[in-house]
Amino acid sequence: MKIAVLGAGSWGTTLAVLLAEKGYTVSLWAHRSRFARELSAKRENSRYLPGVRFPSSLAVESEIRDAVCSAAMVVVAVPSQAVRETMLQLTGVDLHGKVIVNVAKGIELETGKRLSQVILEALPSLDASQVAVLYGPSHAEEVSRHQPTTVVAASSSRATALHVQDVFLTRMFRVYANTDIVGVEVAGSVKNIIAIAAGIADGIGYGDNAKAAIITRGLAEISRLSAAMGGDAMTVSGLSGIGDLVVTCLSQHSRNRYVGEQIGKGRSLEEVTGEMSMIAEGVLTTRAVVRLSSRLGVEMPITETVHAMLFDNKPVEEAILDLMTREPKEE
Ligand SMILES: NC(=O)C1=CN([C@@H]2O[C@H](COP(=O)(O)OP(=O)(O)OC[C@H]3O[C@@H](n4cnc5c(N)ncnc54)[C@H](OP(=O)(O)O)[C@@H]3O)[C@@H](O)[C@H]2O)C=CC1
Ligand SMILES: O=C(CO)COP(=O)(O)O
Image (tube, rainbow, N blue to C red):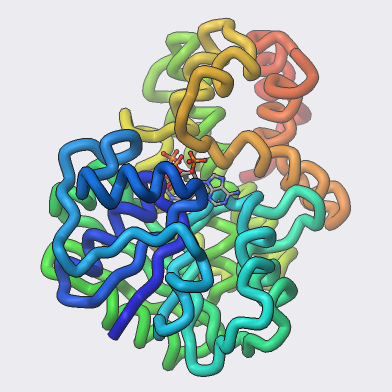
């Protein structure tokens, strides 16, 4: 079976290598042809995943349609705000029988939509049963070094979720299946906002109590939004919920936590993101989710506080004091 992986950043490259090592024929598409040539020549992605060699069954493509045409599965690993434009490049390609697996985590800024909705909208010939996501606590730096990792394959079709589980499963990459694609996508996207909050607490120098509070009350926000969008209440206690929330709030690898940490140290968002080569999805997802939650009438105080610090230049200590001194609540 041939699999196309769209997006040659750290996660796309990691999954392409994992699938190639498992014996599939893999086409890894990089959107810049010069970079594609560099990857092909070096047989390594020294910019995004240094030290990981490409197996011989992995080929690098600069033409997206060549990568996808004979593939039975298409893994979408571009930044979330680029998912629609990437899918539109496949207009006219015969997608019959192909399964699309999105691994990008985010909410589309312009529409407030989940990425599986964006994919189905951009490619109307697809049926929902052809679309899945693969989410969960999985930093590329660890997966690519064969460290134990657990993730969840979710699709509204149980057969598709099980198929994706089977394709990705390895001895060190354990994949669970789930049919609640809504809950999985909401949790896996919003956790990046909460990780920015956790990073801010690190940057200021707050301790473990603050971190536990952010994770726990962050999970409450994720649960409320997920319920309002039709997600199953159980999903937040799974890998895409508490699992990914914990890893992203605690990990030294997390780009979202890092952005927060720098903001907590008093740097500006522009300065921090301007010097990063990798994507921190939580920044634009904060904007998208503040709009979405206000439209749906869902209370998300941590998310709103992150938004005020990132985009309204609200001083960090003042924002946290306002968050802590809100009206007392029942748990
Ligand atoms: N890294 C990880 O551990 C994990 C990441 N994810 C998710 O996977 C997604 C991708 O992240 P990741 O690989 O880490 O990101 P990186 O920042 O490592 O790389 C992003 C990649 O996307 C490419 N890119 C940027 N814009 C476009 C575009 N318009 N069309 C096509 N490609 C584009 C970049 O190419 P260039 O720089 O040449 O422009 C680069 O290759 C994100 O949503 C992330 O949240 C999920 C789980 C784990
Ligand atoms: O989603 C991730 C781990 O599961 C990656 O998180 P960061 O983008 O914050 O590094």
